[in-house]
Amino acid sequence: MNTIDPYYLDSWGRKPFTSSYLKTNEPITTKVINFLFPKNELTSRRTFKVVSSFLIHAQGRLQYELNFPFYKISKDPELNKTVQSIFDRLVTQTQKAYPSTKNMSWKVRIKKDSSINAFCLPGGKIIITTGLIETLKTRLDKGISHEDLIASVLSHEMIHAIAEHSAVGIHLALLGTAIQKAVIYLVLSLANPIPLLQLALREQFLVYLVRVEEVINRRFPEKVSKWLCQQLENRLENFFPVVILMNLSLYLFLYQMIHLLLDMRYSRSQELEADKYGIFLAKASGYKESAALSVQKMFIALEGSENKPNAWFKRIKGLTHTHPYAQVRFEENKKTILTLKKEKID
Figure 1: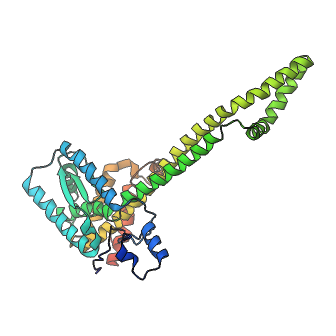
Figure 2 (figure 1 turned 90 degrees about the horizontal axis):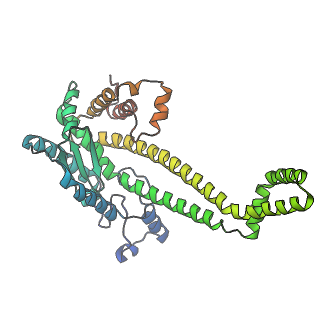
Figure 3 (figure 1 turned 30 degrees about the horizontal axis):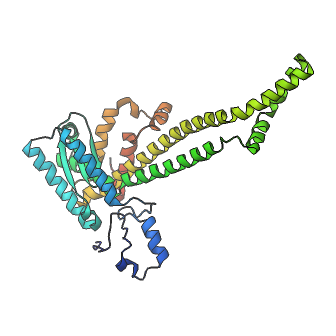
């Protein structure tokens, strides 16, 4: 079991640059790397991080405080007691295995909503809907209780917080924005019609210019044709900024499309990771790990025809999804459980 490190700053195991830490025997390069590329306590994966967990958790708290007053919260005492009991067991196991999560403000609330949904805000605040809880009752497979199913959902959401998936998304967005602004600045700076760029522009349009000048020379007297050709070349200088702006608009459109597809792909990988470690957490907390399969069976039934195999449009449509198809998640969860049970699952 991990012991509590007095230098822990967040679930990435990152240590602050305090005087006591700087006096330790670690090389300064190691300290810098551990600060800028901290290792997540759960996944052991290093990721570039410049925004502290304190700020990310504060953002989650702000989202919670802004939206919570507008939620209709379930007043059912039995339901609240059941969900809170499950959540407390999961939190206890989490804090036992990953001490840094004691700094997180864990909380669960049941939203009175017929939609099937659950989500976790940065810092550990989880919302689960009554619609999802009621729908889970329809998947009470043999040996699986309603509590097992709820635990499977909650553990999945908790992993998002422990692995700080939202933090990764924020940093990727910051990096993407920085690249975008740098390219925009570069492109706009090139819009200055300096002589060198004028020459480059003329070379770019040389083929078209020669053809146009040939037509002009054939149709007009020599003096007129020379004047027209000169005017045409002069217009190219003024046309250059327009070309730049047109290219910039195209770039922004392509950037947004590529960013969207990459963001969706990364989101899908995070969902699979939350499934995997969520199964580990549920099992360690005393719940049936196979409940994760029952949950995905429920989503397979809800997705219906979208889960038909070998449908070419399914793959294309899947590129725009934040979550993998339930059938994919079912198969991946099955592999994870096999590694735990080491026996065939029917």
